[in-house]
Length: 253
Image (cartoon, rainbow, N blue to C red; front, side, top):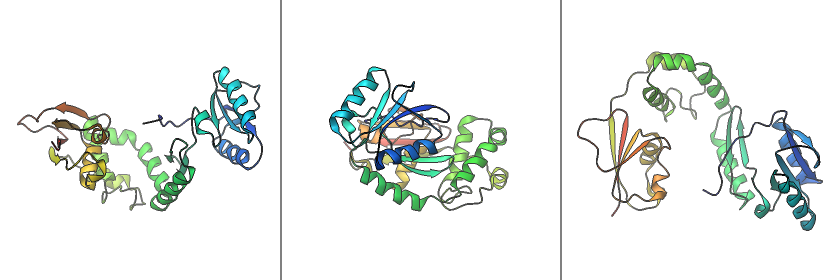
């Protein structure tokens, strides 16, 4: 992973913008949309965007700003960037960001257009209603792991809150019908080290699992698909059922 994706809250915060022309105006519109206060080079800020066409002038500006400890994005110059700006799918408060580390803005744009067609306009409403119902959800599922599994099940394809097909976001109906989930174990025997060879069901299981038991030398390319806070154990599972979803990941030796 070449960069750590983050979402910065820029409302009311100063950001330096240098340059003129279409590229600078595009960045100005984006910053204003995020609520940033655009300032000049001599003013205090933690971020700067440089949209200067001439190479030498742009490089000199990068050097001056970095010397002040400011993180810099230099438009169309990935080697000079401390951070890059992704293509964005906006379903406020849901944001999807697609970045290529500056390798290809065209590829990021193409992916954004595909994702735009998949995500309904009502997605933001679903997020807001889930947030508003947080206390009720906690009361219905006091155990954190059980709560996560219930939410995962509701948001799964075909679930009552499936974000791609159900636009009503009927939280009341879901809370009234949601029940407990019995322990479940899924055994995945790897066919290769290529994560693209995982089936949709296998990829979803790795993304949702509570515990993963690793049998053999499972490659990093596959382990990166496991839910970040899932418990990973080298070796077979115990004979008694484990609460939640357990995945046995069997390396293709």
